Length: 94
Ligand code: FES
Image 1 (cartoon, rainbow, N blue to C red):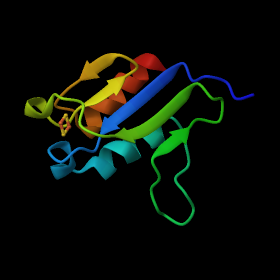
Image 2 (tube, rainbow, N blue to C red):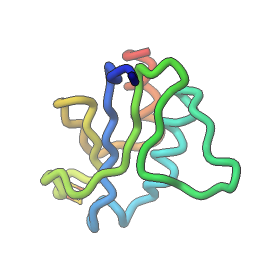
Image 3 (cartoon, rainbow, N blue to C red):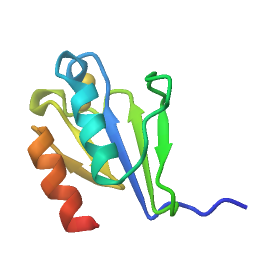
Image 4 (cartoon, protein in one colour):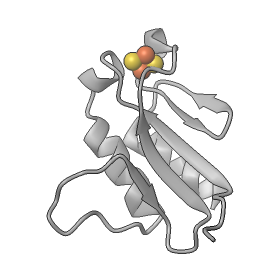
């Protein structure tokens, strides 16, 4: 039986947020959480840390397009994100 992650990080990949460099946001998340990207370099919809505490996933529009790019950590909304802001946020959580 798989453990339920303590933190689910949902990065919006909707049409508005998708205008930004979502790959860079995703990559920053994965780096901070030491989650390897796929060897073939292709992205997938969901990544889980080795300890199972974190799951990072791409999701559709969260409904806060006017403050793009956005992500959620569990039920908490974070807006106008950048690589730097994601890294700072994760440092607080980790
Ligand atoms: S497209 Fe990202 S919140 Fe709507």
